[in-house]
Image (cartoon, rainbow, N blue to C red; front, side, top):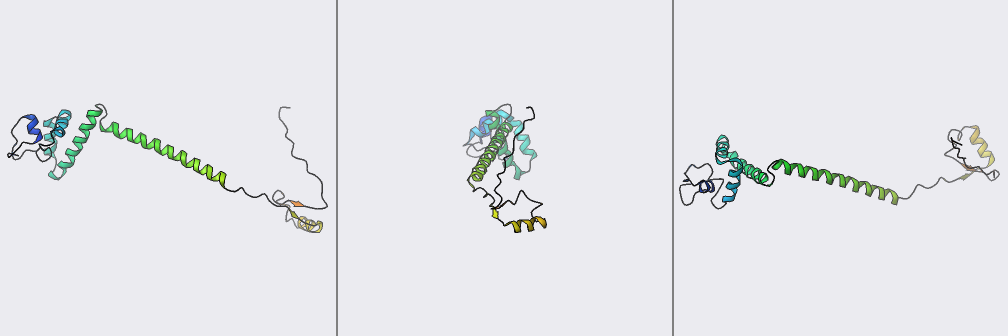
Length: 167
């Protein structure tokens, strides 16, 4: 900066801060910790080279990314921000699974609370009507769906027998 106080990088590196210091706009003197972490992880020379290769309008974003990655590397030296991303992806996956289970439980409860389908009612039909329906094959194709109670037909039907294949 050449004026009142040097930037955080020049202060840490104990050098004179020039007017065209590449670090000055991004590492102000009031936040020395920011540059210290970036310097420790990437090195001042590497950061300087990276910033010089970028267009001026992209440098602020690059510094922000470097600071984020440096902080992540301090917390997790092996994986850095990839470890944080992986952790968050796993957490999202677990929460999606919990949500699916909760939605399935809600659906089961809703289905249990819905009224059951009413049993089909038996219709009383005279023998003449029954004979007409049978002759015209109106009930022959679906006897399981239409059951008629006849006052003259009081024969009890035997329940189906269960047979075992092994006895």
